[in-house]
Length: 323
Picture (tube, rainbow, N blue to C red):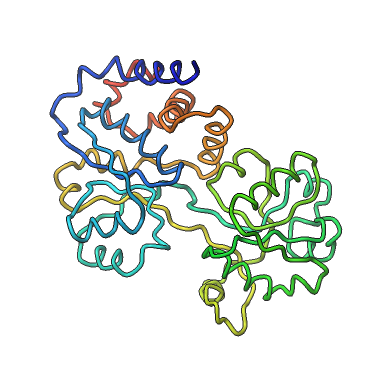
């Protein structure tokens, strides 16, 4: 029944303007990456393009490497969104250098976030835990354990090197290396539900960071050279550094930028706060909702935000939703 209700809601949102979806825009292709936050971005963008700008949008299931390869070999799709450029490699840099693509801007603000986290209730009870120095001076307050990034993940290399850089284990904190993202998330959820200590690596936007109030502890200043060295499995002398926010962009082909400047402008405006996206993911899980239903929820509850993304013509077409 819930799916029927939200499906009807999505159709109701579309209905007032569907008849205006003429060929003033034409065909547009946009990626839908395999992770949930990207799928929500695509669902929201598709709705705005179709109902506000009259586009005929085709969603292309993809992932980072296939999307970059397709851009390089086929100059398509037109729009690639939620592209984590810290994992795109040399091909992406060549596409930029050759002028094949245009970066429209950040689709997540401030980007993908990583850090070492504590439940906020723990930091509120013990403010000294807000820094890594305070954590290491009080290992018993954090349960004497650090929940590490899972085996085989890229974040594990950096996290392992930070463990060495801070001499974390010398402070009496045991490092538990998780075998999967599922066990890492479950450990956080279990501790949070019982209001027990939990200390570990996590990233966003993710459902747990939308569901649970967590505090990223202060690891000190971001040191670009140190962080680059910490990404090396053979780092001889790892140094402390905060995690930088990862750029997460929307890009378009140069040809699409020239032929559809109004859509390019729209997609450059489509930006979600990283915390907002985490909260959307948590709502989606709690309501067993689809990506389209999450898009409806966002559109219904954040009119003041997305109404600034669209141009005057789209505002007129979407006026029924802006009241």
